[in-house]
Image (cartoon, rainbow, N blue to C red; front, side, top):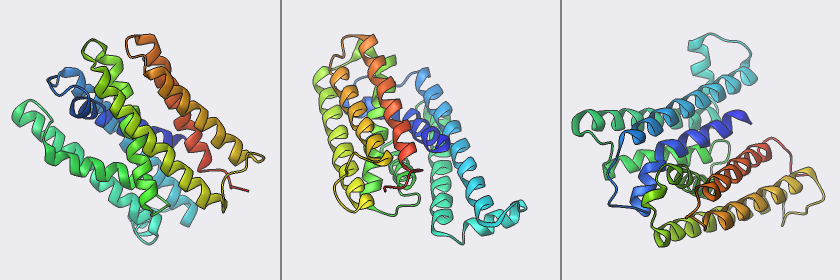
Length: 244
């Protein structure tokens, strides 16, 4: 559960400023804080991927050597998807680093391709489905924008932020409902642990969206961010609980 939360938080930090400038404030130039956001997020996402790789290989074949671990990983769909995820994560990280060295900024439209693919493969770990990929992209876009907003309150454009919030949360809720329906074999019933945690997650997301609309208050944005992180923890918990 911890590795899932760390991965999403890391990816949100990596893409937060890019999401912010691309959808909310295109006139803002990248600053030093963007590098710290990206670097910290990359390390978190990488650590989470390594933890999940270790857990997957140990559960499959016990304590093995490094070479054997890699072979076991590639023999399962989960391990193969995780290997692709880690390769895309490295590609995004190295591409960003090269752009920072060459141009002083990590911004290039082409870099969005491996970044989006990295987020999508995170969502599809164990669930090869477009709904999971879109769900992950919506989660990271919303959480990343909130993270960036806490550092860029003075340059917020309310209309652009409202559009980003509405779009990402709408995708998040829609794909989440479809995933829950397929997972439970019907529309969720809130008389079991899975359904109750799902209800809590929905309420947290709704609260985060409602509070974040008041973007003039830094405290409101911070509260919305905390609710979004709690919703992320609920998402990680759902992955460990059977639907019935």
